[in-house]
Image 1: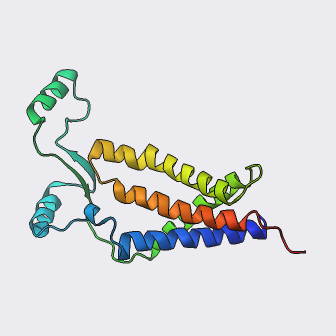
Image 2: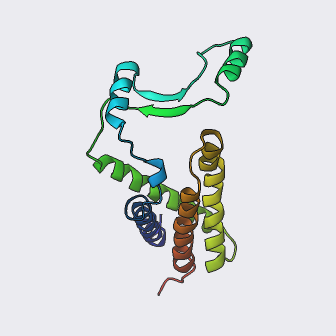
Image 3: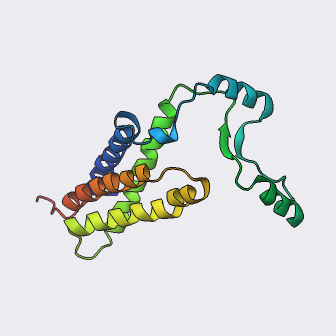
Length: 183
């Protein structure tokens, strides 16, 4: 990996990481995904007595259920309340490793983008932005948006994240990568 790629990847990862911090923290774009309820203590108490650690879709049919059971389930529960619950026995308040893993993930994503961009003929500023946005949209449409379809989660905040973060990274790399090295 050459110096231009390393600098491009590090700055791009920092830009992505900072955007994510702003989006989730200061701007609170994702507040709808982390709502508060005054019933949290009683809900957690019930869950701790009833669930093992894991993610649950409620209501659901038991594993291996036959077609008749599945049909009865749809008839009985159609139009009634449902939930997706990710239950953990212990809340980790030290986010150091989460931050490290997030930054490494961001760095790898930018490295992959750089690899793609360096294989684009006649790369320029606008092509870099368009490629970055296209790749961000591929991720959004094939993962995040599918979750919004099936689990009725908010999507606008994630769409804003795609355009802001990948647009910024595309602009950075569109300025940085085509520059000629000084002799």
